[in-house]
Amino acid sequence: MAKWFENNMSAVREYPFDFERYMEQRLREIDNLDERRFMKEILLQGLGSAVQFMEEKYRKLERRVYDEYEPRANQYETVMTIVKREHYDPANKTLYPVADMDLDPEKLAEALSEEGRIFRGTIFFEGDDGRQRAFEETGRFAGVSGGEAALFCVKPASRYRDRIELLYRIFQANHAPWQTVHTGYLDKFYDVFQAAGNTGNISSEEGVRLPLGEARLYCGEYTAFVRPDMLPLWNMEWIAFDSANFMVPRTDGICYEHEFSLDDREEGDGYLIRPNEDIMEIRHEGKKMILKSKIELFEGWEALHIIQRPTVRSPDYDAPFLTNRRRDSFLRRYAEKSGTPLMTKTDLFRRIMELDVREFIEVTGYELSRETGGPAAPGMNWFVRDELFPMEGRATLVFKFKEKIPGHYLNGSMARFVISQMQMEISEYRCVGVLV
Image (cartoon, rainbow, N blue to C red; front, side, top):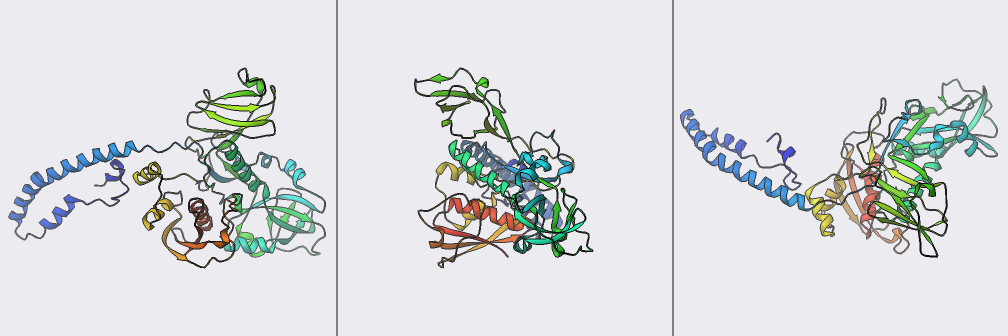
């Protein structure tokens, strides 16, 4: 029985009945040792063999049924993590910076600095959601820049949110199914700007060292949670191409159809074309992508390569991987094929725990409230609009989650990821998650 889960794919009987153990327990009730020995030989050789034979027959039947419900291949699953900038491994071909400009702090400062405030660096807040909200609301902190007292303001790093919104638009343009991207790391990055004026006095505290301008940030009670010079990575890379990479384009006299071949690309990986004003239509046909355009020659177009092979952990890549992958099971395969998700407690919990959050939280219950409440808390699909049925007018479905690692700074993000994905699947309710 120890290896039962390795040989069975059942999601129905998670704790199978152990006939052998049951017979051993019943045999212990026989006080006479000779009788117990005699009965054990009869049961194990007779009933025991029959049970093993029937279990093997059911295992084979289960496997046949399971294989008939082949899941749809997902070529667009995402993975994210964070590393210190000094630990970034450019030879790792499974993880790339979310924003390439992060690799050049000077260039990033030039792009983000503006009149009245100078970019000094990006920090990561490694604290729970409550502390993070308080840190963000404080907004302004004292510090030192170039040996003089300075005033700093912190703002959410908008370039990462812009990347996720761009990713959604690319999915839409390529007619690819969208699944919530886990932005638990990206939501905790803040840009630090030196504001005009100063605080007058230099604090005696050590502060957090920023990468630019010989600056230090005094965060007070939040200092222990601030990590400077961190880099978010994901399993995506941009591929630039031009018309010289294509076969001869086809034309109907009005438009050109350029073929982007996938024959020499990674098998099983996802490829999406970034839309632009010159691309009129994007179609996927087998192992090629058809780009319809009015121009014959072009350069600098981009494709997004989403890597699906196992993610490699380079040295010092210690942070957990946040993914939007789903756990495989027979019930999931059956539900996908039937196309009719159930609104039962069992099915809701199954869909939640199929998400890659099991190491951090587990769902323990839910409540349905007829009170519509106020606007929903920001989720991870803020760019998806639903104007037909406003969220504020819906009844509230509250999911309760238990922390498996009490106090971990990602627990709240895990709950928000689950709620964001469930909200995409459940349109009749306003979904809310709480940690209990």
